Length: 203
Ligand SMILES: [Zn+2]
Image 1: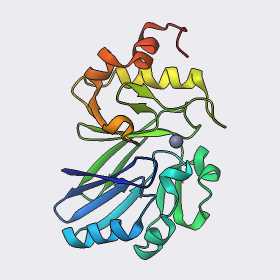
Image 2 (image 1 turned 30 degrees about the horizontal axis):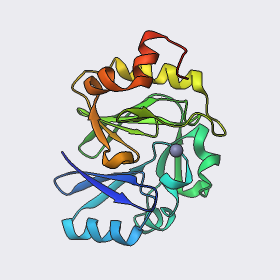
Image 3 (image 1 turned 60 degrees about the horizontal axis):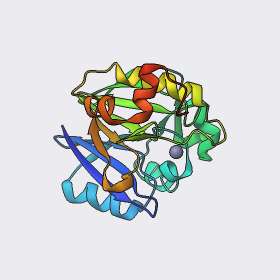
Image 4 (image 1 turned 90 degrees about the vertical axis):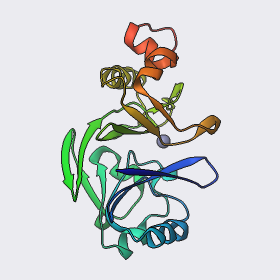
């Protein structure tokens, strides 16, 4: 499995292109569909599915044309459908924890509400795509509509229990960095540490 990070748009968003052989998945394609189409074509990849980590505009924004061109519906947790602002006919809503087999990819969807009600992390092999739930050294904002700080604490605690060598790939490269490991976050991320210790001092 190959993971390409496409850093696109003015907000340091990370779109992930995951491929095996000629088959590909995209996570959070939102900006610059021309560049994404060009990358797919250049690599000779066939897009099998699109998945969203959550419905915020900067993770979904311009993807409608891509979905229509590839005749795909994007997977999104049902609690974030309205938030996405996308037409229903390009979405494939689901509810809660899921195992999905898409082409050669075995995906495990872990609901991680907190940043938004329908936020999820997407696990593929040892890679975990965390959207705006978990960043290297931080977590997503919990002061937005449909945010829930207590749910975020629970979500971070849940993620801390994944294998330590799980590689994380976040939804933005804030500070120039979008990847890390669960082990590193358990050691260095004050929000995850607080959730593990059940301290209420930080958030
Ligand atoms: Zn967000």
